[in-house]
Image: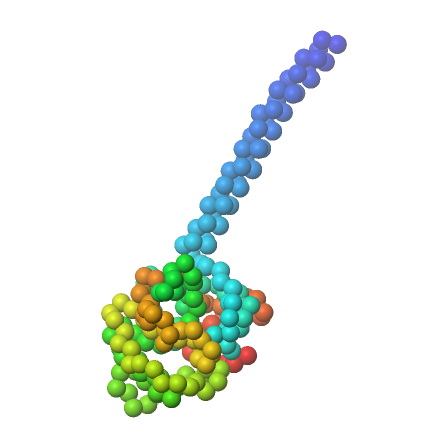
Length: 195
């Protein structure tokens, strides 16, 4: 009987360290998963839900997008890119618009058509939802800044109406690369397909 008690006590002693080891192992996995999720979501990508129709028809209300935060670490933003950025009039909000004016350019909108600098031909914008209206500008884009407009121009609250018309490069969160909800679609600079 004494041998059985000693054997049981030894088995219990062996189980305790292995149970503790297993709990520590799970805790380490959870901590690593949280750190990895943080890095992915705050360094590599951002997840965005589109709240309005200002970017129709390429991006629709309720669409979910993946934003590449590293897009402009090794290159400059380009005209036509769909980007997420800190809204210049209230940086607690993120906006999604298309880059129209680049640093040093003058953007003028005449009867809804966009002219860059002294161009005689308007900017080619086949992604627009409807024929835009209105005359705005000229807007002289400062160095290191960008002029943003929505694709659904007639309802878009964009740079034409903001108190601070220009988005500084460092306030651009990243470029929208694809939508994954309400269908999958890669978003390219020159995405001319209306859905």
